[in-house]
Length: 139
Image (cartoon, rainbow, N blue to C red; front, side, top):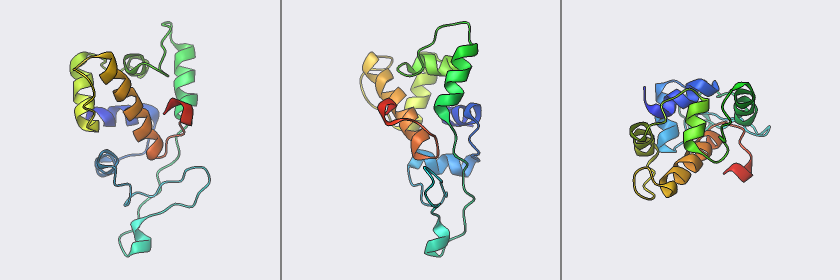
């Protein structure tokens, strides 16, 4: 299980290993996704096997609820470290390097503010692109 899979797990995404691989590759073509009431798309319409729709996940509501219940004041909306802490995941430099590798984030030096901001945006963008309800202002 990769690091991004752990994030998906903590947020309740219904994603098996194959779906996670597709999410990371950014293909999105073989997984049906329902976002904003739009009809799901899948490879079935292109002659491929039908994909099971992934349920939409309200990322903001979940993270806000976790933040309210947490004794620490964590700013998950701007900090990758706080986001990972809120999900009770390893937020160390090594863990962030692993996540950056999975998401192909190459901005800045390891652990720099530039890399952390790029990684935070990449995580939220990847969640939004795959059924996560994430407001545009966070992307």
